[in-house]
Image (cartoon, rainbow, N blue to C red; front, top):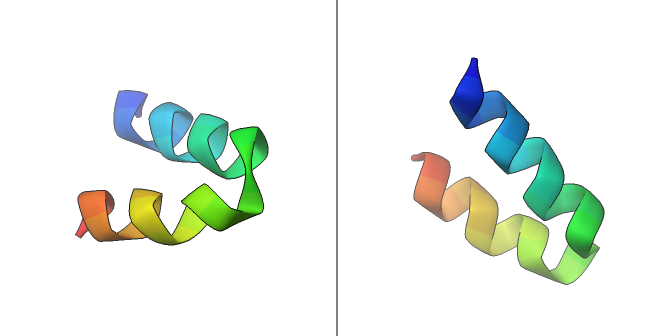
Length: 26
């Protein structure tokens, strides 16, 4: 649950960082 919140925050922070967030999630 917390992980999803962190990922969502990263995506909202910046679409460019969304790619990095996905890598971290994996």
